[in-house]
Amino acid sequence: MARLSDDPHWWRDAVVYQIYPRSFRDADGDGVGDLAGVTSRLDYLVDLGVDALWLSPIFTSPMADFGYDVADYCNVDPVFGTLDDLDQLVAGAHERGLRVLLDWVPNHTSNQHRWFEASRSSRDDPHRDWYVWRDPAPDGGPPNNWISVFKGVPAWTFDDATGQYYLHSFLAEQPDLNWANPQVEAAMHDTLRFWLDRGIDGFRADVVHLIGKGEELPDLPEGREDDLVVSIDEPFTHELLRRIRAVLDSYPQHPMMVGEVYLLQPGQTVTYLGDHDELHLTFDFRALHTRWECDAMRSVIATVQTEFAEPHWPTWVLSNHDRRRHRTRYGTDARARAAAVLSLTVRGTPFLYAGEELGLEDAEIPEERVVDPDGRDGTRAPIPWTTDADHGWGADPWLPFPPDSTGKAADAQIGDPDSFHTLYRDLLALRSANEVLRRGSMGLVAGDDASAHGVLVLHRRLDGDTITVAANFMGEPARVTIEGELLLSSRTDRPDAPFDGTLGPDEAVVLRV
Image (cartoon, rainbow, N blue to C red; front, side, top):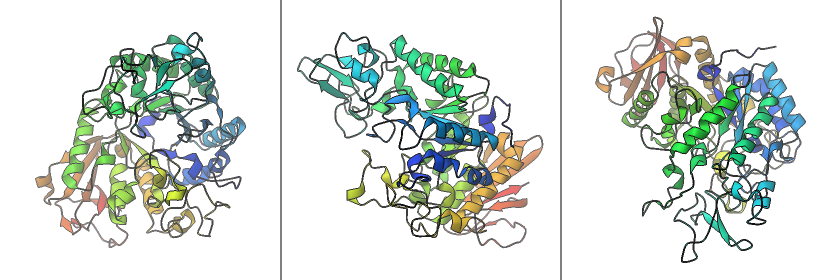
């Protein structure tokens, strides 16, 4: 039996594997992935070499936004199983040395949550102020000019029964909670305690920077009305986060919280770590918006490392359930493989999206099968486990499979020395075996010093140990003036010979200097 580390900073060393449960593994044959399916693949995760798994929302939900509209924070939706199923998953993960994170949605609930049903029943209901209600503007329209993230419509819906508008930053079925009400804050703290008491190791907090909107809710500048998510950056959020952190810190398993802080201006997201008293980590999405180009990627890495210099700690994300997979964005296997090398060797905590280790692309979704309100179905396509017709699902899954789902099925890749799976497995093993890749400092080499334009070079250093990573962003060979023992290459056809300074097209290498 593996043992979980007692290190309170375990999340700095960890590699976290994001699972979109509907698309991971179906154990009961209904075409929708479930918790028992995740449990059945825990050994796969251990063999791959990750340290923690994060489950996208599994709470009770009408699924208007596929779980991000929560109707009960303290139960499991029947489509995924039961609380007992989750307990078995957590126990099985802990036995294998894996931690489990849940997706917590603090900004909004479902309109079918009992809190909102009470809130909208009457202006005098005790739950009325649990949500954000406002009188109409003088012209009878919405209270301000905010536009919801989905659909491009006002972020306000008029309620005929009570004559006021309620705020929803996303769908009308997702009313925003009013965190300025201490009762809301206390109730949401209790939802965290419910899961921490069951042994959960931490949380991913959905758009957590939105919870501190406060009471004023002024208009956004003209032309920025639809920039709601990236415009809310209020001091009150930091007060709320410090109190959330106090709840987490009161538990013995050293739980962590990583926040989706979707703010894109330099220096914004790091402030949500506070003085080690707010979030443990914040997602940094700049790599998701960066093209495969050397100077652009070097700039992103340099900026992130500067902003998150010690004692802060960054994250690295190439793909997730909201954005196109990096294999699709970059266009070729070679580029996706080289990006994988970078993602698992830069300083920070990597978050891998299930199927990334198989080199999966986004699925093509026919119009009649589109179900997501924001066009994200392609990146949420089911994982192909086997090479047979149903790819290990047993029924037609809720979404079509990604391209080449036979050739890229897990069974086809495991043990193949040239596969994406083997590359990721080798990278994770290398990271685990070399503390310098997990905890070392990092320096970027200036482009001229690498002796090849279009090559990114970085050094990781710790206690006299140095590992160098070089990535060629060009579609042609390049030479660098770097020597060292070749530990790993993203290429499948690199000759079995000492490294001579030559990089193949779109190749990344890891060297011990």
